Length: 296
Image (cartoon, rainbow, N blue to C red):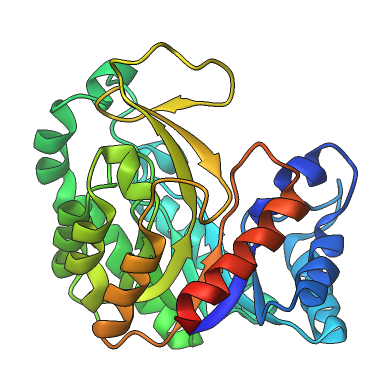
């Protein structure tokens, strides 16, 4: 498997002004990663996105590191004022950005549910009914995007992300509904816990559809425990998670990677660090632990 890091791992440093997105390229190369993937492009005001993407690619070429996935948001229910075709056209433009970046794939969301739903209902049992109802629309949007992307040499995928489309069974049903060889899954090993799903079970289900893998770790507190305070967020069932260095939390990272290997996966694996520790430290230690898991 090829190891990389997501630029979002350094977002705290980027947003505080300590480093730029270009600095993450050099840091990733110095740490020994084979690729870096980009999430939201942190463009200076007034710069065209394609121009910025071109400069990022040149920086990666200069540093001797490949560009991995391009990761963006999308919403086929509410995005572009609820106009599905307009949202698809917006994603077509993002595919063009992925081409300029030199990425081989693009991950996009599908939706976090209808916006007129309350947050409480989105985190309850209600989304199970809603997801089945809107699945044809989501699949149509994904298929129109991936058909365009296939012509550009870009594979598209969706991640278990954002509560609404987070369970492995929902991602599997979406991929099967899209039914296109250019569309698959970005498996985030840690994110299944946000939907209170055992990661090893979920990875086993989705491994055959994998185009790309994210590795992250979490600390965990039961909903029955006292609120641990700042830095934690709630799962769908009101348990609490906090980002952690890979190997420091409860996510069975090593087991999940073994499942992926057994399924024949030999592709890209990227670290996403979301902990409270210094990002440079968290990414570096996580990278060493990840390499040890894969070597074992």
